[in-house]
Amino acid sequence: MDDFIVRAFVGGLGLAVIAGPLGSQVVWRRMAFFGDALAHSALLGITLGFALGINLSVGIALLCLLLAMLLVVLQRRVRVAADTLLGIFAHSTLSLGLVAIAFMERLRVDLIAYLFGDILAVTIWDIAWIYAGGAVVLGALVLMWRQFLSATVHEELARVEGVPVEGLRFAFVLLIAITVAAAMKIVGVLLITALLIIPAATARRFARTPEQMAVLAAVIGVVAVAVGISASLGFDTPAGPSIVVAAAAMFALSAVTRQRAAA
Amino acid sequence: MPEALIRARGIDKRFGARAVLAGVDLAVHPAEIVTLIGPNGAGKTTLLRILLGLVQADSGTVERKPGLRIGYMPQRVAIDDLLPLPVRRFLELGRPAARNAIATALAEVKAEHVIDSPIQAISGGELRRVLLARALLRDPELLVLDEPVQGVDVIGQGDLFRLILSIRDRRRCGVLMVSHDLHLVMAATDTVLCLNQHVCCTGRPEAVSRHPEYIALFGAREADALALYTHHHDHVHDAEGKVVHMHEGHGHAGHRHG
Image (cartoon, rainbow over all chains, first blue to last red):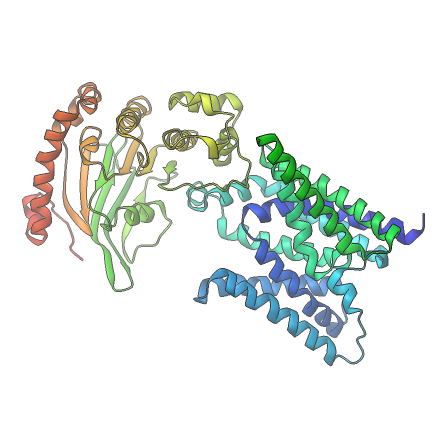
């Protein structure tokens, strides 16, 4: 097998393993649109990384983090419905990113690759970022799992029981920012949220505990990545969308089997 | 009387231009059941939230016994169906606990049978008991219960109040609760505090505080309970009618009126 194919699998599978548990928490906390808004802003991070002459993934993670903090503050200050604010934010930052890239004459980027992923161009450096970032994300999730769950189930009860709810909110946003930066090369800005929420939503139907759902979501994500990349190689389809199509097919299948079982 | 577990003095709270609480004093002692009653919008839940530290009062003080362990039962709990959560796991969220500690807590609230059920699938009454079990797992010195019988049928309500009484008797913990249900509350409390922005009146329903067994019986006997309720309600009603002049009449020395 060619090196670039090996790198694609190694990177994609690593990402799926992070996306399972994190995506489950995103689904439980009803933060799918929040994650999507952050992912849209990642393009702006590329210009930041380029302008500062730092690694693009670091630039993306930094910018996502800054924007995430801004978003958390805006959500409290601005009197606009949450979904409207997130919509404004997502599309404004995406457009800003596109405009900023157009202004940077020396920066030639393959926009399609950033929007929809270019998994077959994954480098060793990308893989290192996915695994290092992934270790941080998974480690943090494991350490704070019970507290995250508690805050999700009932925020006030959690606060009375001594859970630092505000701190967790920021920690969670940080985890999403790291994951967005890691996922961009694999599935692209527009499809990152899909990788977070589709495996988790699929796993829900078969899980009886939160942990089962998180692990199952990771497994489903791994299968989607493997099927998607194989299909991409076999049929010459774009890899990111192929992965998402594979995940969506599993979701549809699980919905159908569930209905048959219930009937 | 032993030292109070929690004591609030002169609590004021406004939301915008609206005064929700003005000069409210309250204390809960070990093994004492204090019940907040009052009409909708009287500030009962706000007062509870201030005592719990969830909301900051505009002025006034809240003193807690150092290291006070509080078990809290919120009024509304709605858990999304996307989260697969057996009751056992819900109970572990408050504090990591072994399965048999959880089974014991559930047995104390008479809800052992739901230990492995998804929390979204249990009835309103069972959910109340499970919430109580989560509070008990913290080995609380003070139980704070916001509308503990909400969404429970009348028979179930009596059962729940008897359960709260028996928990107090066994554990000697203080209990602070909010309720709408006047007649059942009268039978299950030591001190009633009627709130309508300020403390209208406060007192001890005698039969209640002196004879717990009698009360346990009393709760089941609607007619007698209602008679007691009517009596107290008249009293409260007077108070609400002329609140400003009420305070001296009720021995409310030191009551500040915001």
